[in-house]
Structure formats: structure tokens, C-alpha cells
Length: 129
Image (cartoon, rainbow, N blue to C red; front, side, top):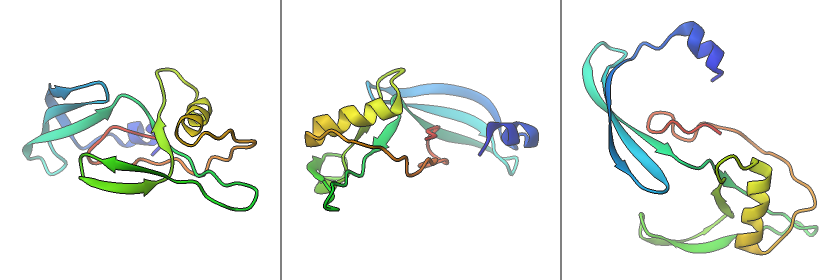
């Protein structure tokens, strides 16, 4: 949602306090004490990712797609996925995507097309892409 619309409408939530509960190189978790939209006092956890995530859909001239396989520790499974990664601080998103494509697949793209921008999990994180 456009921040101007949010500012015009105003948030029905009131933040009373915020405390950092966890932090590492990739993300932090803050616990907020809030009056929620219904007016009830409640704790509310928010995850802040330190890098913007990105996914790449590499397609070659023949229409073939490229995937990478890796073990995902958190979910404890091996997965075939689109190449993905995150931007470094201040890095242009297109440059970050090109770097990740080189690192994960060993390819250089001739052209780029942004497919989407979205809020991946607006109730749990402050991430916007």
C-alpha cells in the first residue's frame, strides 16, 4: 500500500513499547506491546530482514528454466528452487539479482524484466518489495 494512503487513513494500532528480542546477521525480531485495532492490549512480534530478498527466473533462448537445489535447515528438507538471495546494503536490486545469478547458476543475463513487487508477509514482517 502506498505510504501516503496509510498516512491519510492513519493506523488503528497504537505502539506502546518495543523491545529487541533477537538479532543476527540476517534479521531481527522485535516484540511490540500494542493496543490493536480492536482496542485490546497485546504483544506483537515483528521480523525485520536486513537484506531485501529477491528471486530470479532464469530462462534461456530455448525456454529452459534454471533451478538450484539446496537443503533448507529451518524446514529440514531438500528443495529445488529459483535462484534467490538478498541485496547488500545500498546495492541496486538489478545488480544484486545479476550477482546472485552468477553466484548460484554461473550465468549472465542479456536482458531483465521485473515480474512483480509485493509485501511477502505483512502481518509478520516489515519487508516490502
